[in-house]
Image (cartoon, rainbow, N blue to C red; front, side):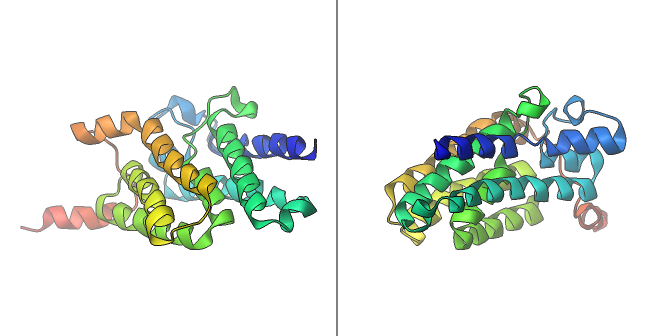
Length: 215
């Protein structure tokens, strides 16, 4: 019964539609009606700029982290590492579902990448740090948040299964599912990347302009 209540709470936390609320409160618009139509950090970067995109991304990451930490409210999980990790995965994934299908925003949310990242931070900080390195490197080189997210998610099971060799079958399966989920939710982005029509985020745009001016 307590687990069910915490899972519902995790869903409510994940359902906080950060991008929607920020766009409506500060700009009088619904972010889902602009750009890619997605209520996530990437579209916020595109439509509202890096300042607001960063704010949305941080809050969405914290949603996943907060959901995972709910497991610590039950003493049984604090004393059992394997059960703790498995329950944290359940809580975190519930928060991700809440982000994708938010209760507070007509069940039309974002893709859940930032909230997934918060989940990973809460369970495996070193893995999260490595995935962050992949994300930031790709973002620096390309300015495509979608491509950065996809490659970081693909790197996630590589770190879990190969590099860190985590001895938890549920976590290993979870890592593979995460990579597949991110790829699945980015099908339109992949199509735009292949067509060369994917939008870049405004960060580092001055660097790219200087490169274009060079002979």
